[in-house]
Length: 288
Image (cartoon, rainbow, N blue to C red; front, side, top):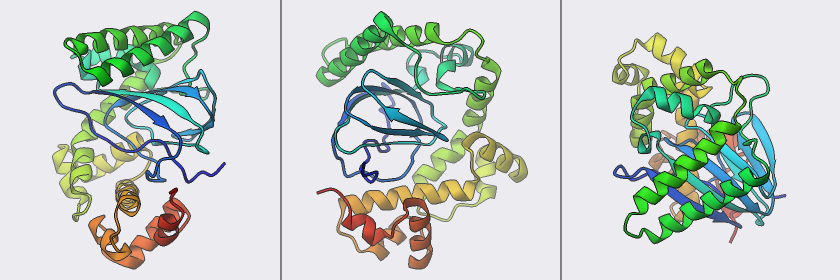
């Protein structure tokens, strides 16, 4: 398998209806870097093969699998070109306004413990119904006919109910709630980084945005995201550089500066550390 081909990249959802359904197939020229996004994600594997890397876990993709990905875990899917995957992404606010409901009914997106995993434990008729709901949501989102919002909310609610029922009753809610709470507290900083990654960003400014001391912000950021602020910012910048390398003819130096790096040498070092190749090699190896 050639791991340079990925099938998912970053995106944002419309504020008025924070939902999207899409289909990822075959080879796509998108960044070969792990990514995050400010929403929850469901992946249905229709056919083909590949690998899903979610947080520190690795899954061999097989037809009939359903994966749940939260808004904290870094992730990426790779394929040799055969993968056909349905994707639904949404904001919890689409269905619930209270934190209590979100924390309870979305626990399955935040696996905790030594046996934690992202693969939904569905089988038989329940798994078949989940596939039908994913396909229905894809069709409704594509057609956008009158009342599609109601239809999508209904089908997404049913799918989440199936997943909630399939979740082991012993699954602890406390850790999942703590993770979501931590994310919400540092969310202003994450939003600022996504919008201003090409500019100088200080820890003091981010901590102030979140109403925290620098020390506490650093501790909570690393606990929630799994890395410190500097490493996260570097990954965001490298991800932007990968997109520019794949979609433009800009010189490498211009891409480095556009992505927020102060010099070509620092850009090359960060890029090679993340992507295991130089920017020029990355651009040359992109699928045609």
